[in-house]
Image 1 (cartoon, rainbow, N blue to C red):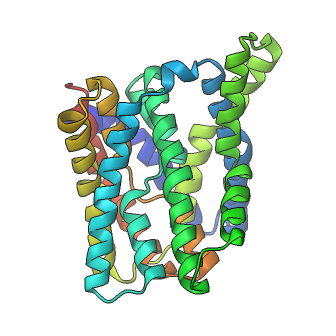
Image 2: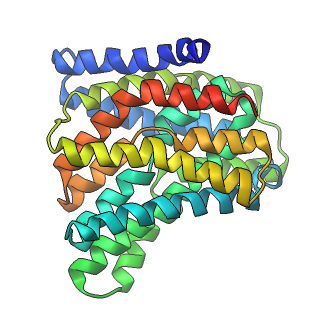
Image 3: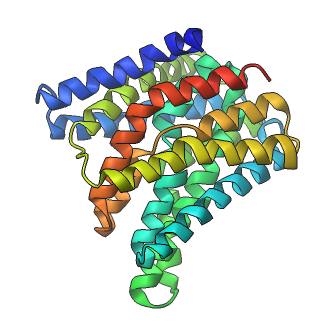
Length: 309
């Protein structure tokens, strides 16, 4: 446990450095927004494209893994939803809390950290987790919020979801990478070097951006934040582990990767959704802040456990 904590500490130290820069206003909110945009659209996309272009989709796809992650995630989503209804939350706020309970920071934190700590073979399972989060659950929350406000499903909702997926650079980068891999065309050396250099900025840039963005988050509604943090850091990896190891018998190494991915703190893009739809931004902000702070210990513990598989 201590050895893994020491390995994960540099990642969280970068987050802490970003947090300090944001809190002291050395890095303004505008600077943080531009850094996040650079990482999201350029550095992380280059990293994902490079990974995908060197993988075969047939080698990456694992139906048992996808089923296990979907089952475990959906179960925790259902628990959070049930608790929300018992607290008399409306559909939109309930959907936002359920999103906090299951959507981790896989893109900005999981991709760079898990591939370094668990080995380059982890990228395939991490990419599948990221795809499920983006395609299934990011679409679901748009359907629930928009449908609850309009009172019905419409083509406009489906169009919004479709355009959101097409404009997401992580999805585009992964798809283009797999297309390139399918064509079996070697990446030219100058292009490969370009992708390596640009993708190399993803890890420090993403972690620093996470910390700087946390500096603007508030710690209000701590009771709700505590519950959502428990869902994300404890229940989510627990139910994914149950599904992967016992129900669907996923390969132990791949199971370990998706369990580790499920243990990541609440993703920052959930706050962007909360702001965009004006649904519970304060509680989402607190959940991101609390879950990220506690994940220093919980993520380290879970990674220490899964590497024993």
